[in-house]
Amino acid sequence: MNTSRKVGLGAVLGILFTMFSFWLGISVALAEAPPEGARLGLPNTDTDRCETLIQIQNVGTATTGAVLVLFGDAGPCAPQATGPIAIKCTGLMKPGSAWTFTSASFNPGAKSAILYSTGAILSASGAALDPPGLSLSDVCETFYQTAFNDFQWRKLDAQYQAGTLLTAQGDRLIRFQPLAVVVDRRCPGNNTLFVDSNEAYTGITKSQTGQFDTTFGGYMYYTPLVFARKGDASQGQDFNSLINVQNLGSGCANVVLWFQSQNDCLRYKIGDIPALAPGQTYTFNPNTVVGPGFQGSAWIRSSTPLGIVVDNVGRDMMMSYVGVPAEVAAHNQTAGQFTYGSPVNYAPLIYREYNGWSAGIQVQNLNSHLPARVRVYFFDQSGDIITSLLDWICPRGSQTFFLPTINNLPGNYVGYARIESQQWFAAGDPLTEVPNILSIVNLIRYADASMSNTLEATTYNALPEQQAFDFQVGTVPLTYTLAYPILAKGFQGINSEISIVNLNPNPGFTDYAAILYDQNGAISSFCGKLGSRQVDYIDISTWGAIPANFMGSLVIIPKSTTQAGGYALAGVEVERIGRILTAPDIQGDESKAFTAIPILTNFIPESLLANCQLY
Image (cartoon, rainbow, N blue to C red; front, side, top):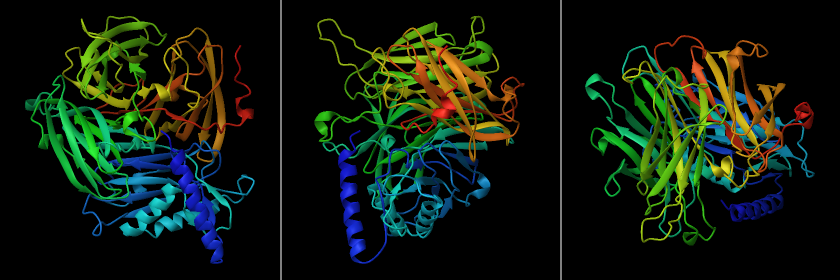
């Protein structure tokens, strides 16, 4: 997405504000326009119903803090809007380290949030100043004054996004640092008393809110998998979706949801959210629009940018993923084409058929008028093909590609998948264009081959090429470091497992360094080597070098490679609650997962990487 015009405007406005302030004799600091990841939407915190843990990692190059602005139930828009109901501030976080907010720190009724980086104060030469906490305390105090004041908060939010936020700290520069955020939720099961379901999602960045369509108006988003009483309702085991829609814009939002049943290419059913105040989340139930037995997708139009998280709930399980912005064609935009999808998607982790696991890839066609022909390749841990599937997807529709539960195939128990939208033709017609696609990954474990009794499940967003690897061409050079904001070994019952996959299909090896952080900075590192298409799966509970009850964060950075095309690492983290991977199953859904977050900054000191070399 081209943001140079916005950045330039922010800089001009900032200079004008600074000149005006000096004319009045006021000492100010000028903030640059915040980068990707400095302001993030959290559409569902649900602190009344669930135990919520928010883990915030600093993935910038300087020490920073963060401000969490919390919102309550969806209510009227301005002038009656309530605005934020509470403001929470972190302490200082060094690059790579993380800060934890638990349920005990939230106000009752907090349903959604927006997270802001407080940034680092820099001198004229660009060096960080000491103490760095001046920016944290000042920005925190500024936001704190907006509690229960919608007008004041929206003005401050607009200044923050434009890069004109002013603070009384001298004529120095505030550079906002990017953050990586994971929201963990532990909620009651929908079917059985005293049984929990767990899931996680990552914070929504600016690029994930999409781009305004200047021709057709508004913003648009896709949610590939939506249920409404799907399954055996007589046994209380049907699946339902809850679509959490957060207004991340500056004005009141009018939201329309278009539901499309799987394999039905023509007929839609429509729901709406007539008025949604900035910052607030409305939870839409598809059962109010579509009939029972519905499985399909939705595309969502809005007058303002949105953040969307879908919770698929059923059988005492919860599976959550983030909605993805629609693409905008170049002829509709003065700023050029925008797309979050791509012709190839990657699922960095699947659990094999072994031990009752089923992997389902839900793929949505982003093209509004052409069917997509999609082939999904399932790979084992060594990069060999298990099987491949080929099917059609309706325009704007979705389809499931399913690796079923069987126990008679050899091989390791993890792998990954590659999802390809392919060019096609019909007799007498020319070749079509290749529609872009987006995908989510559902991992469900069953107690038996009949698939009637589920044990655990999780969902995560697959990666488009621009965040992973440009297939058959080469890596995207900006995607450099993988962030895992939470890494736990027995902390509050959480045990982390991480996957790292080398997506580069070319022969050779890639070495990587992993830097481990506690909440005060880097504490250790380890090295790894992956061949072409190999998956490394690490169960942290088995690593004696990491102490019990550890809570921290992790970054993975490629160090060197012999592969043509360059670096192509991706990953997923799975958190298991109440048990470790090798322990017997416990009642409830104890698994949750999220995609490792690709970030653009390289903040790792070379001294920490020197011991990871090819050999």
